[in-house]
Length: 326
Image 1 (cartoon, rainbow, N blue to C red):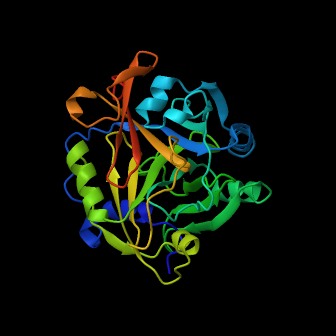
Image 2 (cartoon, rainbow, N blue to C red):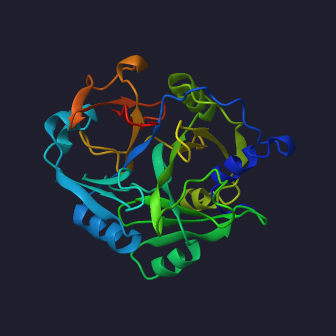
């Protein structure tokens, strides 16, 4: 039985297409999502999570302030204007951020039971050492460290913070020079997979593939222990697939949730709670021809950004970055 989330097992299997049913389709020539830039946690207590990620992940604050009126409007969350935010990152990847935004959490919200962004997966150097450290932390360990299979060199665990903020922590114990995973470049590295859930996985997969020119992998029914536990469905299997961004070691995982699940509850005018907003680098906002919540604007210095609502109700922030790949 597979207790670990299986995105990376699919990724690993795609490297051995000649001997597995998880064969990847021909890669897209040029995916329009370049890399992950910001993974946002929407939470009531910014200081609590800042301390948590500092003390236990070793992340450092890079900037802080309050959300501007225009940026909040671009997210479709006007009541977040004036709320505090903190941008944090690892020393190994200082320009890939966890962002904490002050945001109210609706009563009854439970992580990994609703549609939208459900977790951020982070590359780490020594998973066993991290597990030992986190056992004394405020994090709840919802999945103990395990290899993806009996012979896999990729090992992973899952943890949940106090604001329904969920993280998968993953390491490559084998040859890292030829790994499909990024280098951790430190004890805890950067987010490298963002996990999205919704009720119609083929529809979601087709939307991302068509909108951003991403190659599709086969969808496979997979028992996922942490989702089973969250949803109280011990015998369930979930359709799952992955999509690769342009830059090495940047992926999306798509999970299909059953029809009994619902859209993410949110306080009116605010962000979806928990793992609330995903931000990606793109070369051109104008070229995408998307129905943005508000028109593109220079929200990050000179960099323009705009946000679109995805097929599972998720918020996708796109930030122009012409430096990627240079």
